[in-house]
Image (cartoon, rainbow, N blue to C red; front, side):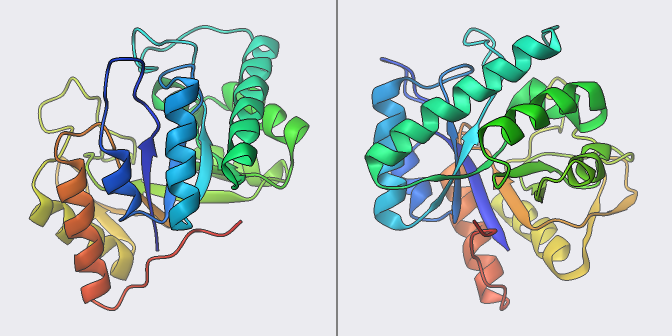
Length: 250
């Protein structure tokens, strides 16, 4: 099982998360590309730290929304969105090369990620960008969402992802952050949920239903105040039950 986190999201004087600590735990790092978060020096610092630890790197692309941290839905024409994603991947590729590593996959962020999970026209704009830059780049997407089969049909390799610290609806979507209980904080509860997912391929929805998810990667959000503690306990719990943690593959 791959364990990933959203990193490189600090901006200027504003520090978000503890990238160094998270990079000691995770096997893949989704690095911000400057549109929803991150500045060049901070992004490069995170890439250097990832390279030093042998952690796989992905481009965490998003809407051009620094103020909203990329969590606001934006109506962007498809050609513009494709160009935005190409720009972000290219920027991260250049910084990654300078850091002695490379970009292996693309994971959309926030509102873009959630929208394209079911909006296949939005997904097509992102898929077009990935294929234009490098068709060998994988797409990391929400396990069980329509975008998974759609991207595979378009010729992309897809890494299906589950979220350790987020609640799910009965339909398999992430519960809106504005809903009480949408974000989980208890490391024991999170570890138990993800252990069951890794062993049985199922997770419990916020309303009690059991969902079947085929996931190759688990995400712990780097901006969660308890992120490091959650990730560390999760990694220890999975390894303690015989589950190997490894990057999802280049």
